[in-house]
Length: 158
Image (cartoon, rainbow, N blue to C red; front, side, top):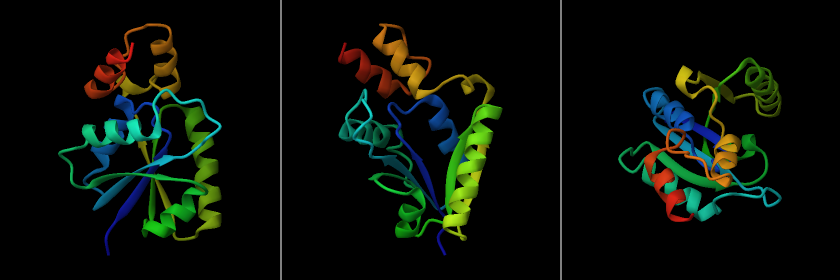
C-alpha cells in the first residue's frame, strides 16, 4: 500500500519553511500532496492558479510531490485520496498546542488518520506566509523567506 501524506494549507505564498518540511519528509512517504485549501473569504496575495503554478515549479524535479486544491474537511480529502497521513510543520510551542488540537479532532473524525509533525529548522522558525505578505505589501525584501521562483514572481508584479 502506498504511503500518501497530505500537507494542507493556504501556501499564500509557499515559504522556505514549507519547502523544508516537504523536502525533509520525502523519505517517509511515497507521495506528498500539497493540498491548497480553498477559502473564498480570505484575501490572497496570489490567485489559486498562481499558487499551484509556483509550488509545481518549486517541486518540478520531485516526482513524489503533487499539488491540488480542496474544500471542506481535511480528513474527508485525505479519505478521498487514500492518504493515511497529514503532514504539518511546527515552528513554536503555540503551533504545537493548536496543531495537537487539530490532530486529535482529525483522529476523532477519521480513526485511521495520523498526523506527522516536523519541527521547523531554526532558521525558518519565524517565517509565516502572513509575515511574508506583510513585508511584501510594505515594499520589503522577501527573498530570504520564500523560494527564489516566488520572490522573482513577486518582484515582477511590483
